[in-house]
Image 1 (cartoon, rainbow, N blue to C red):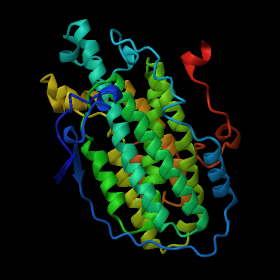
Image 2: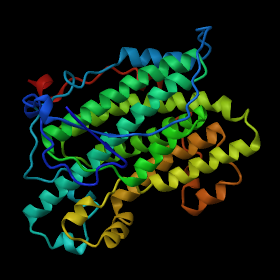
Image 3: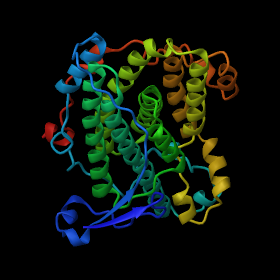
Length: 369
């Protein structure tokens, strides 16, 4: 195995992103591991009493144990995928209506749509790796026994998500797009910060809230039943993760000095501002020679962006309010971007225990056979 150290993520599209059958034929000499180093001043802690002091966190941990799913066995990877049709409803394509895209022949529009689809799913994959790394840090730095146990189970959840999206891209897209710079910047910030509660805020509220908004958008628009199945399984886990963060941070934030609360509130605002636009990378637009700035402006005004931003702020704002991050100082900033209207939505204030305890869905095609 060859190891390559880099100082930033690869910027090119990996075209030969092989499926599992091809990977099985590779020798160690065929494999190149690309590593980017990050440094963190993480301060860890032991917990020597092992007491369970938070019944909700322990219950979330129990639900995670009960409803673990297996990406290899519980996903119907043999479900047919129609590459001659759009991967999502054409009316919801972010490039729909853009002149250069509309000028393409129909078969090329479909190829373009599949590439854009692969680019979006690649952000899911990269984001889940970041979540796995941050969750592993939470095991060390979380102060209580309950939180350490739950963070351990979340780390395994995130590993399963990485596995599932990696398998989907290899089997059905055959290409891997680089990580969106905004998403990378947020993950780096959370990984490299020494404050354990900022890791909770960045991971459990913002990154996981972002993921749920993106996944919710995908389930509403995709025509691919296989991807929908994968995303719905992942969302089961993410719902528990956000509930963990909200319930754990609610009591902690209010104990901080006002200056530290404002610092965390500003971080949450800046992260939200960046993340509202993070999914729509420009790699495919560049591949087709489109004007990147014009494409970005078009996408930001599209219907699919409106759906995503609605799902994002519908979840983030009430959660920020619940834990004390919607301060008087940042409220006008959220008002200016149209997000404050969501502050009284349900968010994750009330945990739907019945929904979280629903049995795993059976595999689609095989279950029906």
